[in-house]
Every structure is written in C-alpha cells, then in structure tokens.
Length: 327
Image 1 (cartoon, rainbow, N blue to C red):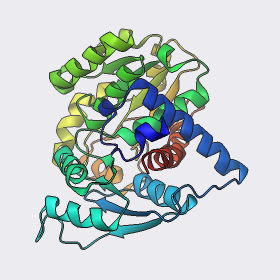
Image 2: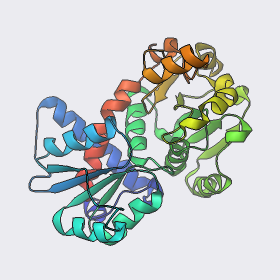
Image 3: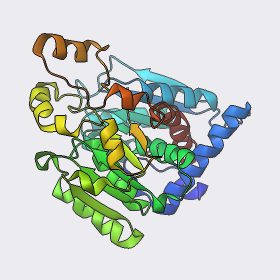
Image 4: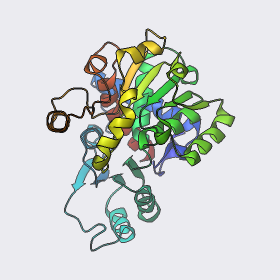
C-alpha cells in the first residue's frame, strides 16, 4: 500500500479506493499515537513543502505546518507571489515542482488544484476548494472511529443545512467510498447537485453505502453523527440574510439531537462555527441587523455530544498521514 500511494496527489476521495482510504485512516491513528507517546521518526526529513492559500485558514495551515515539522520537513508559506498574476498557474506549478517535494493548495477552483497536480510533477494536496475538502473527511472519520465503537460501514452520518456545499460533497463521497449511510438533511433549495449525488450513488452501489437526501426530520432517526457547517461559505457573505431564512429551521439544537433517537449521537463541525455572539460577524448581524446566523446552539456545541475539537486536532494527524503516504 505505501508504494501504491507514493508520488500521488490527494485532490478528492473519488481518486482513492476504500482500502487506500482505510490505510490513510490507520496511518493517521498510528501517527497520532506515536506523537502522543513522544515517538518521532522524522519520516519527512529532507523534504520541502510549499503552502498556497487563496482563502483564510486556521486549522488547515496549522495542521500542515505542524505535521511537516513533526516529521522533519521544511515548510514555505508562500505569500506575495506572482501566481495567477504575472505568471500562469501552469508555469507556477512547473517552477514549484522543480524546487519542492509537495504542494498544498487551499482556494476557490477545483481546477486550480488539478492543474497544479498535472503540471508540477509532484504530490499536490487539496486543503479545500469550493467543490471538495478531502483532508477534513479523513479527520472526521478518524474522530468517528475514536468515539463510536462500530465499523464505519455501520455508521449513519447526517449533514444538516446547506447540503450543496463543499463539506456535504466531500462527506457524501467519503461515506459512499466507505460503505456508510449518508443523509443530507436540508431545504430543497439547497439540496446537493444532482451530478454529485449520482456519482455517490454509483459508488454506493458497489460499496453497500446508502445516500439519502431529505427535508423531513423523521429521516434522521437512528443517525450516529449530526454534522453541520456555517450557512454561507467563504465568498458567499452577501447571501447570509437569504440563507438564514432558508436554514433557521435546520439549526442544530438539542431537540434535533433528540430526533436522532440515539442518546449517544455525536455532534460534528469542521469549524469555525457560529454558536454564540462572541465573534465580530455573529455580533454584527445580531446587534445591527437582528439576524441570528448561528447554525448550532451553544448548548449543543458545548455539550457532551460535541466532538468538534477532537476533529480539529485530527486535522493534524490525518494531514500528516497524507503527506507521509504520498512522499
């Protein structure tokens, strides 16, 4: 398996088999245990990695940098570059491929990360695009395995809210690959793209997964994990008032957790989250416009059901697994 993954890019889980994803999860758990025990093997010693960010980041940047340093690699966080300005993505990719061993990209277009992978000749890792967020899914599945004591194939995961965003797409792909039941629960206006659902259902037909899209809360009964995300993704801030009208009935509350009919249901979120009014954005919308943009109640976010900070930590270990496996 290590030889099969060496030299490959990590752009979407659609590119990987269930056994390859299973290997990455197991490697993530192993590397986490080694870090906790103080064992360091410096598996990336002598490697040079460049990080490219079009979008802001806390967890993704920190996870890539700390993971690289833990394993002995050097990191360049590239800012003020000519990429896409005086130099095309293609030319930039070929330049970076001559100098670095791996490239991380977090930005808008999936086509950009695909071009970097095609033209650089080195592994490229998708830190998030408007279409997908594959490293987050590895962290999510690691977290599920740490908190729910049954195989992934027996897990039901419900995504609540804007079910046509990158997180829903990525979770749907991951669940389909690993034979899980995926429920997209939200208003019809924000249901997943039919093409994304079709791809996931084709995979599910082979793996035994189940894909459900619904606006009926009764359909989430029996779910093991309830997952949500902010209601307007980066670059969609102008749509916040419209989204609040559509999605307020889908705010994650303790009553929604009870609707799962599972007293051990876990709450998941990729973060950042609006769960109180202590952020500038949530405070502004509430105090100035009377709009409550919180996608989850504070009571849920801070409850025994919440595993959001375990997820955040697991970004480090899952990203480390991807870099170690592909380099």
